[in-house]
Image (cartoon, rainbow, N blue to C red; front, side):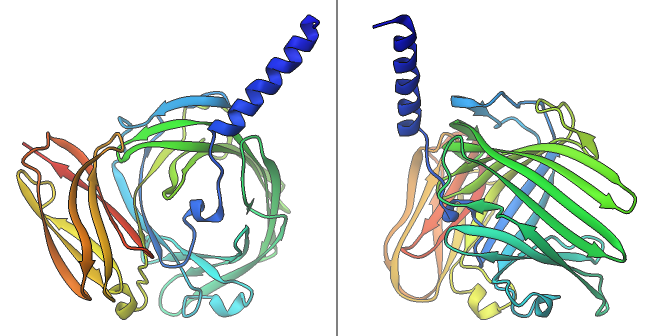
Amino acid sequence: MTIRAWGVLLSVLLLTTAGIAQITLTMDDFAIHPYTELTREIGPNDNQMTAGGPDQTWDFSASPTPVTWTEAWDDPAGHAGAGEFPSANNVWIGPLIQDQQQFRYFHTTATTNHVVGAAYDLGGGNVIAVATESEGFLVTCPVYYLDAWDYVSTSIYNDETTVDSSHYSIDAWGTLTDVNGTYDVLRMRRNNTTTTYPSGEISVNVSYTWFAPDWGEIVTIKSGSPNDPDPLFNNGTFERISSVTTGVHEQDPQLARSFELLPAYPNPFNAATTLNLSLPTPGTVHVAVFNTLGQQVATVADGVYTPGTHRLSFDAAGLSSGIYLVRASTPNHVATQRITVLK
């Protein structure tokens, strides 16, 4: 066999190995379904980007994130501007900032997702709705390592047209460690160009997002605006998802009580804390505690529980100081939260 033939065979073997080792993303791994609430923590970028490729290792556990906000995904009905987007079946609800709230409306299927419009609730009944025309999809699942696609969206408001052109690529896979644990991940890179007409103003940036099964988005790093196309940028922001709660519907208090893991109290704590878990129907419940390596260190509950709110005590006497993740699950719901043990 010639040297060239050996080289071709080696390349095939490496690609085959990568295909076996890396994960595959489905729409469930994007955590964008109605009744999902995310707690996002934000801080400065600490320049931990790497070049793309297989079998990489990232550790963001020491990245500072001093700012926290909560965002949610919901059914569009009843939200500001929803009537302007009849094809929408999913809405992203941003945090309330200076009495203003943003809603982004999507059409989501089991395999695709794209934007249909946005609404801005300025308070006092003043709502601005802006329709979006798009080419392609934000994502088409399943998604594999080395997949790539383009997405273009166009919005018009007050005689100003904004065109967002993005190229997405799954450019790396490997293992990521953050404050909530260690995960097998795929990394998605986005190269974005925003052009505003008639001014002709152009801004470009690069972002990376790491996705893990069951958690969805773990970490996102974005370069600074308006113009930083460098894939190994030094400025920008670092974002982590510190908790994901499913089955929560903030606009409907009755549904919000259907499945909810309330914040631990006290937290931080020394020896013990109390968790309150609300259940709408009887069923099997498993509540466990994990360390930052993703290892289960304790079981808080494991059995069949009746409907209602249950007080669960957790004794951390055998654990060292640090950050831990509580995960409550039933066959249909999962809720997580972070707790801190101080000794």
